[in-house]
Amino acid sequence: MALKTLSAKNAAALDKDLMSVGAFSIDQLMELAGLSVSQAVFRVHPLSRGRRILVACGPGNNGGDGLRLATQLRNLGVPFVDDFESAMTEADHVVDAIFGFSFSGEVREPFPAVIKALKETSLPVTSVDAPSSWSIEDGPPVSGPGNGFHPSTLVSLTAPKPLVKWFTGRHFIGGRFVSPDIAKKYNLELPAYEGIDQVVEVENIAIKL
Image (cartoon, rainbow, N blue to C red; front, side):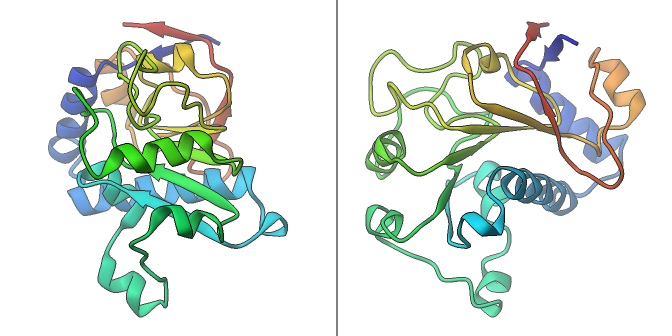
């Protein structure tokens, strides 16, 4: 089945519908997105491959999907690091939650060095909604720190974005919380979710709308 994709403009509008028509709070949506990401990471990186997961969080909602609430994480004993490159030497898997579908323009400090490290690492990398530095509409950049960055896994939240046309790794969709009426409004054909799964793995055959 070809997957229809959401533009950045429609993705933002869909989020607003989820909070109005769908009656979700922003916290609920971020919790559901974070749960989707965690399930996808567990699919591609079971505990037998190592328990040390490093999450790179940006300043916006995409970072929130990776970070969640800092106080809760500290209470659970999850450490925060300042030196990302050093932390990568002790990690088994990296989650790229720096930029999401609202990203545009140039990558600004302090993120170029982080994205360069993501590109050069031999560790498996899972990107949330978009590989950081990629254009939502036009895919990977032709220059800059993200040129040549291709994560091993992508988790598209709510629905795939047009950039999936350039993505060649394992692709998951985490949008079980999108109601049938909202999916119909945006002409989405979302895959069936099994059991209590919040993600489903799909092939990268996309149609831009």
